[in-house]
Length: 163
Image (tube, rainbow, N blue to C red; front, top):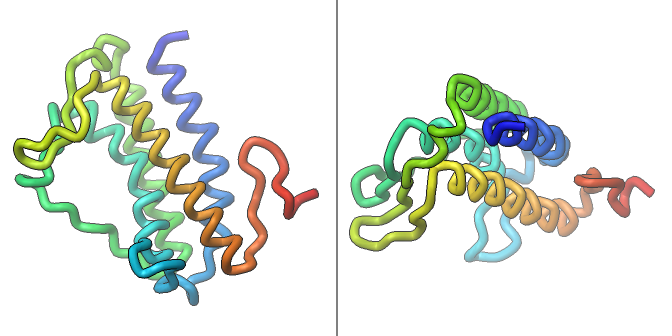
């Protein structure tokens, strides 16, 4: 199987779990956060929903430099907004991957803030890092949901709430 097909398959698999997790977030808790240094549910769910769109960014640019491109968090105000953003991000990612070839994954891609390099890797490696970020932040969301006493859906099998 080509690398592109593998990335598409993994994106689809992770999208199923991400949809389930995001569907559990109550809009009346969007401003809640477990700690003053934590993201709010609004910020966290918006970030999770936007991350698949980074696939397109990585395949169409050489870098993301926060010193040149200020980050603007997505504006979401309810669960429907988050779900719509996720679907838009997934569609962009799929469309870009479907028109790409394995060789397009080879060029170097940088994540930086001016002279500070956060990541230097191939485009393919950074797409995998993006998928890991989705899983990482989804796990954070699981902790938030648990603290709010909201049942957690299974990810790679049933959760304790589904047994």
